[in-house]
Image (tube, rainbow, N blue to C red; front, side, top):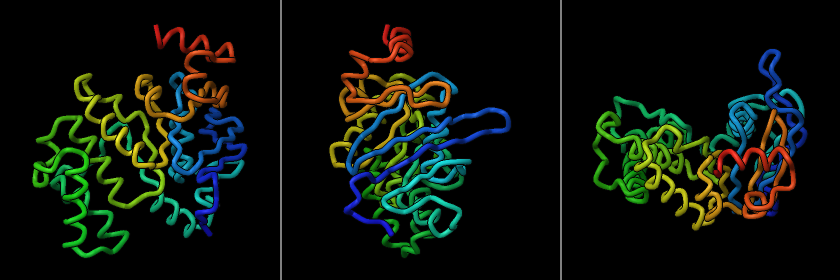
Length: 249
């Protein structure tokens, strides 16, 4: 399974996810085309991050279906393993191993999961660090890096698995304002290179510049979707307009 002929590399249908009595997702359906950049926005607790985590089986859905590059995300552990090797994820917190250098943080998954040799993994890690503007930080430990630098190492680490899709869960929300731009610049480069990206973010300037489509979530539902400029400038739904009146003022 898995096919380059599948136009929608992500296909989620009627996804339901609950945590105890709280229903985080209420029948969400969405698709993402190969090479598309989609930004998800919405208030806190609207289900944005939960949806992202369901797309690579960090959360198991209660109802519905998720298919990634033609692979059904079901109870088959082999499918889950394949999907996790194809989908990179970057979180709000950097989740770097503090006892490993930047280079070794990036080398770890290719060595363990893809069984790459040390020399190959090291060379690829060095290339990726240069790609994210940190070619001089190969032997530096996370504790010696700024927040923006840590997040760029985290992006390089996700890219080391050569994913077909990158998921970003509010990657700049934990950063000081002056560090946000350096992380967004790396993400813009990835978008220009044709990486399929789903980004939960409130960086509207980034969304307007890079995203092909915008999705607005509220109360566990996908309320509105469309071309980014249309959703931002001429939202159809009352709830979307209310949200943007608050965040864009």
